[in-house]
Length: 125
Image (cartoon, rainbow, N blue to C red; front, side):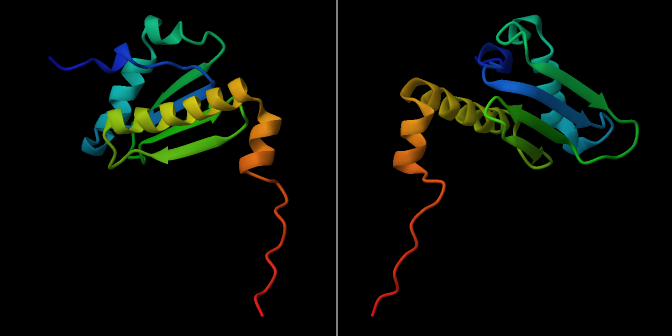
């Protein structure tokens, strides 16, 4: 039995989620699946502060999903060739990364792994 997408969707660490697609295009299948799933009350209850917006176009558009995360990063994803489960797994990986930062502390994480101003590499002689 296939697992429904709604059963594992969570909007945690997502500030805003926008889906834009034309239902008359064959390449909009993933976008329409995501749009239906994120509008369910069960998914919306996972983050009541998340702004969910679904734009349905009547003319041909590139199906896109725009996700704005709580850390300020914004993704514009062209979902023309993506499967909806792959798309959502990609977004969930990002939210788990943010969760890891909030658990271990952002200062320690940034200093140890991602220095903002890395030291220049000295040329070898």
